[in-house]
Amino acid sequence: MALLELKNVCKGFGAGSTRADVLHNIELSIEEGEFVAIVGYSGAGKTTLMSLIAGLIQPDSGSVTLNGQPVKEPGPDRALVFQNYSLLPWLTVYDNVALAVDEVFRQWPASRRREHTKKYIAMVNLTPAMGKRPRELSGGMRQRVSVARALAMEPSILLLDEPLSALDALTRATLQDEIERIRKESGKTVVLITNDPDEGIYLADRIIPLSAGPRATLGPSIPISIPRPRDRKAMNHDSNYKSARKEVLDYLISHGSGARLAVEKKLVLPEIEPEDISVARSLFTGRRRPVRRGEVHRETIETL
Image 1 (cartoon, rainbow, N blue to C red):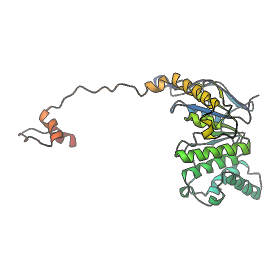
Image 2 (cartoon, rainbow, N blue to C red):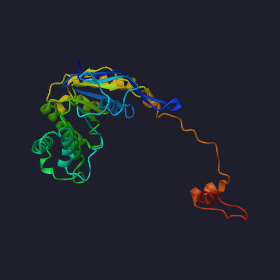
Image 3 (spheres, rainbow, N blue to C red):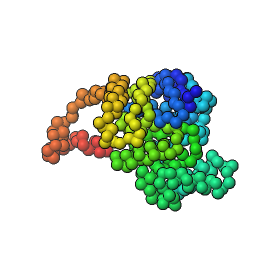
Image 4 (cartoon, rainbow, N blue to C red):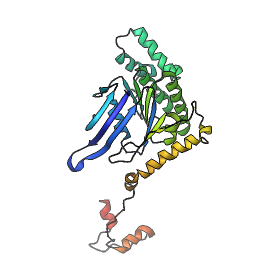
């Protein structure tokens, strides 16, 4: 039995004429210890899919199961790392991580919880910053705190919802390497949502494209057979990388017409002309004719 399974999952929002069908017929199976990346267009429904796995929302139809049990609500067996860090600004690095540890492992003695918290802060290389608050940290460091907090819960599956999308290219690459190191050390099952095919290929065991919405669905699962550890420069010349990237992009392009159409609408302008062409001309020349008695310029009206 797979660790995580989604069977014929559909999800939409609204009712009647305002109904928006976001996801349709989602089929997904993830084994324990796998790293799976799902890549797709912005607005296609990636976060909706992640929210279904996390138990934050329920599907309209179909089923989501973890270890064979229905996912009905959020739980510590699924730790979610958001795009926007989601740290409490008045707490230190230590306290933000300890908040999760104290909640999940409240039966442990205080000394064990302290050591557990420090262990995961060290795992993301933030021990020197343990006493700092989020405002004193860079964006990359804040995201490391989020990852440490999620890992400290010791979940069955780690959910990463575009956690690096707000970072600059160099910081993003550094954190990609950190995620790979942590995955290797912890052996966690990981689901990564991203809009960057290269990021998915670099990190994952397999990558799955998500078509454009509405009614987005998952495409074929594409295995990444590039040996680990992966080298970015060498990977660019790897035939497996080129093949996987082409397959992902071909699917996204061929199933992305809805996304393109959304930005290719014609702009229809009203058929109007200025009532007084001399006033319109004055907007460009700066010269205005005198105002006659009983007459008001259009500029004057527009400023009222």
